[in-house]
Image (cartoon, rainbow, N blue to C red; front, side, top):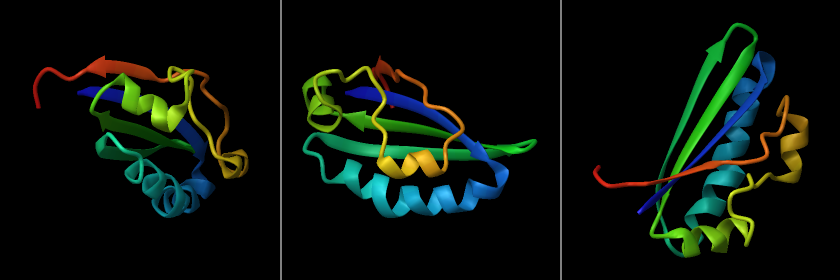
Length: 100
C-alpha cells in the first residue's frame, strides 16, 4: 500500500468554504478511482491561514496513476482551487505503508 501526502493552505476566511468544496468535489473524486483504499483529510487554523493535509492510501503506484496521471509525483489540482489556495505546491510525497 502507498500513502500519498498533499498540503495546501487558504486564508482563514476561506477555511470552511474550502472544506465544503473538498467534501463535495475532491473526496468523491478520490473514492471513485479504482485502487483507492481510504483517506484522512486533516485541517487546522494557524494565525490567519487554514492548513489542509491530505493522506490518501492506494493499492500501488499504478493505481495512483489512474487518479493523478503518469506524472503521479505532481499534485493534482481542481480549477476551483484557484479560488481558495494561497499557493500551489508542485509535488506530493509518497511513502510505502508497512504497518497500519
